[in-house]
Image 1 (cartoon, helix red, strand yellow):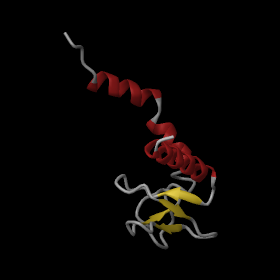
Image 2: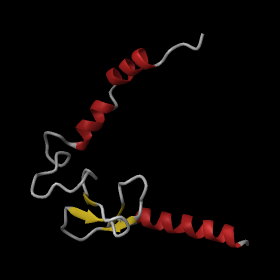
Image 3: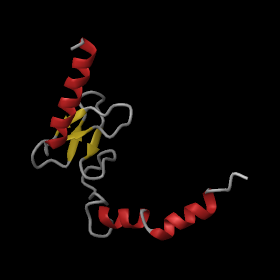
Image 4: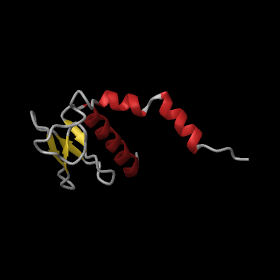
Length: 102
């Protein structure tokens, strides 16, 4: 087995293991994506690689004592996803953004 193939195998194995761990999230910054260990009972996590402090629920910059909008009942994540994935929104996108190639 070549060193390059072994390195790829090791990377995939580590990623698969980290994905199964409930106390690990990835840094939400697209350029970082470093695994971050979550502290029990904390609402904030800090990436050790880039220093980004983020809310563990909404993945936005940590908002301190202000309650997380995605965690409250008014702005639940499920309501947010239902709105963004609704058929009305999809049909609106299709009618306004997709054009024939003629």
